[in-house]
Length: 120
Image 1 (tube, rainbow, N blue to C red):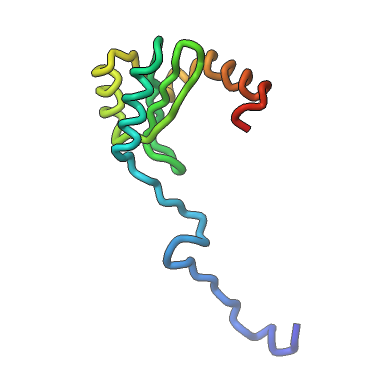
Image 2 (tube, one colour):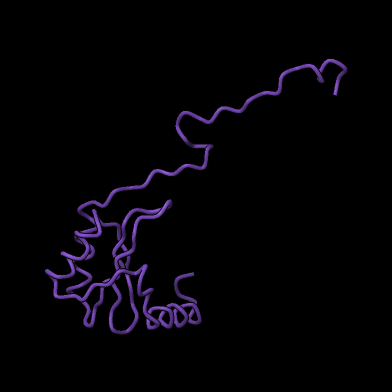
């Protein structure tokens, strides 16, 4: 540190205009591919239940579908209402994940897959 450095103003770091260095994220909206995936997934499995996950700072509203054996998929959806209506149209019971959590069979499925070395 030089003698005159004490008298200089500290440099103020301005956030990047594109948000890249600020840690802010851009949340991708649900699209047709997400809806097609959910529709196909529900049709190919039995005993499916839907868990609607609310918007967070990191992600938009998502629909978590869990089959009878614990296999699951999660995709972004346009809104909480849309997710419940989707489940009703496909005769899938739906729940608010913030209230009921996720089913134990999903956690057991993840544990089995991890032990098999799948999904690392």
